[in-house]
Length: 373
Image (cartoon, rainbow, N blue to C red; front, side):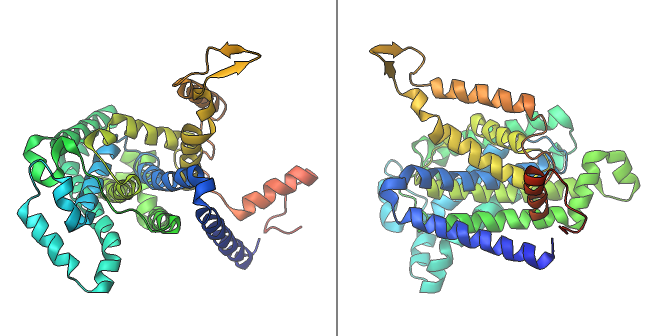
């Protein structure tokens, strides 16, 4: 298939997705659940691709995603809560005077600055996550395999404990959490930010740095023999992954409108790891597909299993609150058994591949090289 045709098809797909999102957003009353699932799925897709960048493409088994999401979420939330709502949010011990003065100064800034401020707050949250990653990466990236996983998991729990500690009351509001966080003006904004983040990570993977990441994943000794600085590239992958993970944490805070430390428990990291494994280690499009499918299954499609059901006056005992997760777990086992490399493996979506699959379906013949009929 010619490159120009692939470009046109890609642009057409983006336009169709945008039109679809606008249509369902105009009917929020009827499609509220669908909007929520799509928005949360887009946010988790960013985290999943970021985790895949580290685990799937670089071969570093990290479990600190929830901690970096918490850093980004709290940083973004603190910056975005309006000044007139600060006193009602920090009603126990008040907010740090320096933070309040800074927020008051920002509200008097020119209109263009205020318009771009939510996006700047997300970037600042990402930079905070990257900073912490750069600092802890110095000791922990010298560890391998399970030891690295345990170290990053411990970091995540430490961050959660610090954010909810009484000593942080005037900054993070401690165990009371933060609320009244301004949300996104449109679901298109969420998808646009997610698309930019995923696109930047894809470009990084396709760059010379990405090829170095894959070389480290395959064989560290051979990669070092070829002149690749192992620690430098591991640190770069770790920092980049944490940056985008923290941005996704800020997006989650804006989506939920309120957060607390327990939102970023170990379970969140496991959910993201689950998405990556189902989509396929080493596949960006697989992570996006996995995020949408897992979110839709947990939040929407399987919810009827939590509702009591009676047939012919006989109550079905299994249909009760919580049974949804049992069914979801069984489906996951089926997927893992029959798709051990995930839905996409280490492959990416391509128009040529789609064309070949459709052609084989209807004709039983493979297309000739170059896409000729």
